[in-house]
Image 1 (cartoon, rainbow over the protein chains, first blue to last red):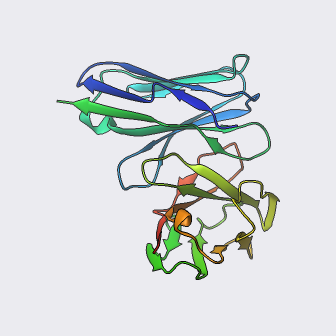
Image 2 (cartoon, rainbow over the protein chains, first blue to last red):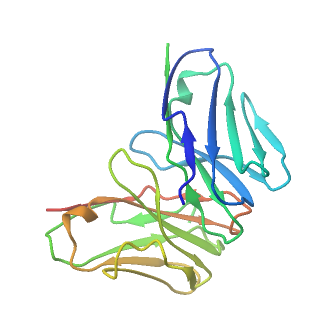
Length: 109
Length: 114
């Protein structure tokens, strides 16, 4: 079952904040977040392991609620370089990475 | 190599022909994944390898698709009797430990079936 991401798409002005959610129907062991720019391969952002931790670097952070089987990615003070499609990748302990439906984010100047 | 390498980068083939797509993972990475990405769509899981074994092949769309990995290194995804619906970018990724570390993606093979 593919994780569902919301919103499907979002448009921001530079400096605005955004939250992208990833919801799974299965119990999760880990959640990974990737960003893919048009015509390029996905690039790793961060991994969150079972335990409900929160991580972040620069102005991008994420949380993982294993009870709710959800993860959220927080983008603060967005920059033009944040534009792209964001995917969550989930692992239910079977080592099978399933990626979410994707969220298209566009940051305008 | 420094990163995941896929070849060819582009492949145009006639309907009904067989194609082989190659993935060279990062040296030492035990896990290797294949995904399919149709235009404007998400990443569709195909298969993953732990070493040379493929514990889960459930993502392969049909029996026309097969994959193998040898020497815990190179992997080949083979599509037999290609159909137009097979047109997509095929992405390969490798990681050091399944589920516990980041996956590095190759640039993909863009397959066009005409």
